[in-house]
Image 1 (cartoon, rainbow, N blue to C red):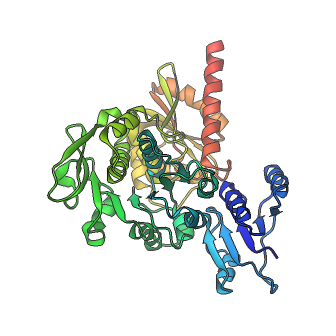
Image 2 (image 1 turned 90 degrees about the vertical axis):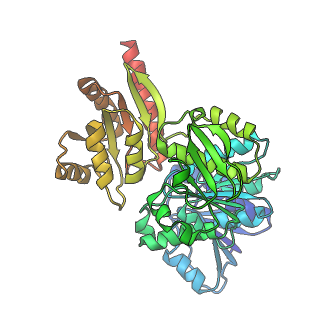
Image 3 (image 1 turned 45 degrees about the vertical axis):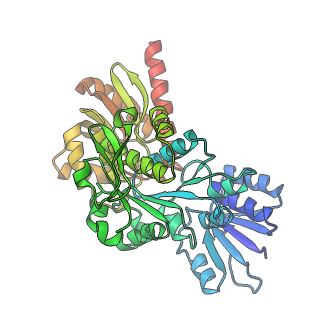
Length: 460
């Protein structure tokens, strides 16, 4: 039996296997799925002397057990094979933890939270890069963490987006700076309780030398100084809303820093420099600027990066404008809270495309925002019928089940004209796995359909 198993043949699993191979381990990857794409990767990895078993979960029945199991982020931490491995005393870690062991001499900014992680990670990386650092974004965005570890040139900083899955399977990861963007119920099918989910996130911040929290988040604000007395807090509402005596806030259109109880305040960057819409993006701006300042980055580099930052694909991404209608891709809104923020950030009336694979959570605020901001809702995917019933239950009747993205985009143009809507917004409030491999491919399909439709309309 190989000395090391990698479970999950995604980008992270492949990078972990290559890093193990580079270290001299005999490696085998297993994945319970199979597809033409995975078969192609299997052949490619075979040339690198890495065995791939598809449609297969390794068993640990014989006496010749592996010394190490590395788990891809998408693989649940409590599946039987992993529980058994831990019971047998086999070291079992996540891909992020394995990367950390190779990169722990380099300072990390680690970003977690229910929503806002990706934008914050991308903006933080842009600021650090603007200051001249080799600071790749990795984890849930950009590179797999093990790809950064494999690179010939080691980075100056690692800017990591960490999901609860990646934190859960990390044992020793201890960043220089930890950021917590937001906290709302999510992934409860995996973590069971809100307390479990909170404790996983909190582990990362407890392990961080310096902590930055979004003080405008209701849950984080509530636990505040009792749990995190030495943290830096942020608020878009001004100095009087800052928790504690140090942090970053917005006042008179500026991001202001206050680094200690006795320090002077200082203007860092104008809020208007950021091109992205929505109050939530001002919160993302504050924590990113906070990380940069705690890392000693000059104000000039921060201002340059913020003014040049284009935003993040699939998060309130403007695709095109046709006949005064903006088409906006918010495919990354995979839960009710993110989708509510998406709706709050666009002009009304909007035509909303929603649906997919529903998640557990409280949909009340999202449904209220639909009533406030939308002229019509088009429903796709597995959640369509359930969402239709929820809309009816709150007295909203202007919806239609269209099932697929293709039908939704065509219908959205017709409805936008009918109701003089200024926006067509894809903000699904759902995971994508019923119809797409991930939210990125769902967003790409929406973009492709919108641009194709615009070309057709122009030709006519």
